[in-house]
Image (cartoon, rainbow, N blue to C red; front, side):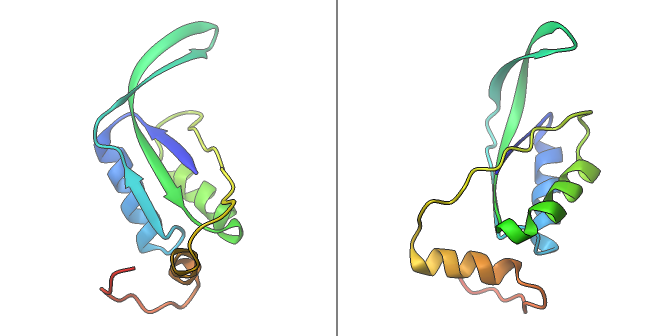
Length: 110
């Protein structure tokens, strides 16, 4: 899933919250801003934003969207879901285990 934020601090806050609450397995926070061009309320806008790439399961999407909307400062935050077509068995197993309810948090590497 893709989410953009207006500040790096906001992106990091969202990333920490969704991983700590096991709504997402991992969030990549791009610390260098991206330049976004879009139309908002009839005007062409250009802005620097910070991109989050969030990994979760289909079952956790509703909870993830609610949490992003709760924590995000934008009136209409980007929330774009991209399907996982394929991946390594080990990584996908880790992803599913990471968002499973009742999972015991450990410091082992994925």
